[in-house]
Amino acid sequence: MLVIGIILSFFSLGVLVCVLFTLAVYALPFFAAVIAGMAAFHSGAGVIGAILAAAFVGGATLAIGQIVFATVRSPAIRAAVALLYAVPATIAGYSATHGLAQLSMSSANWQVVFAMIGAICVGCTAFARLAMLAPPVIGRAFRCPQPRRDFRIKPVGVKHAAFDDELLIGTLSGHF
Image (cartoon, rainbow, N blue to C red; front, side, top):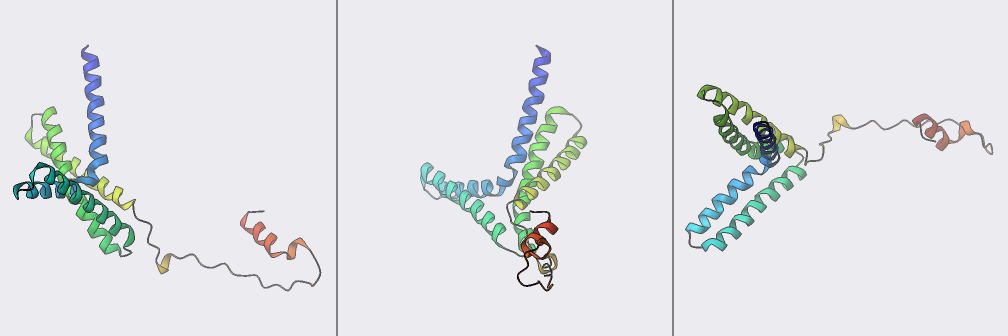
């Protein structure tokens, strides 16, 4: 029975870490939603109004961030938006990893060390997941050169495979 408990605790810890890495990108929209919901509730909107305000602000924050990151071509603006999303994810990763470290070790120094390592991993994962949303930036230096045309003179009326452009291009590129 003890072995089953240890195996299940390792499995549940793995699931929690996977959920942490998956949801790290959504830390900024979640924080924005909580702040908007609390502000709406304290201004007298009630519980339902606070939930609706939080859902709207959280969804809008996520959508605007993803649209800006996917449509803007400037690498500096993309980096700023990605850092805007990665910093709250790093803070959330630090808190979650520190909480898990408190469960498993008694040394406060090692808890902070593992929390920092976890924060860096979660922040980098959030940055990478957000970077996957955008199409690649193709600049002038990265454009493929245009293929040169072969301007050989073809004999008139001769249907020969060596002079057929489509067959020649297909043969050179490996497509028949």
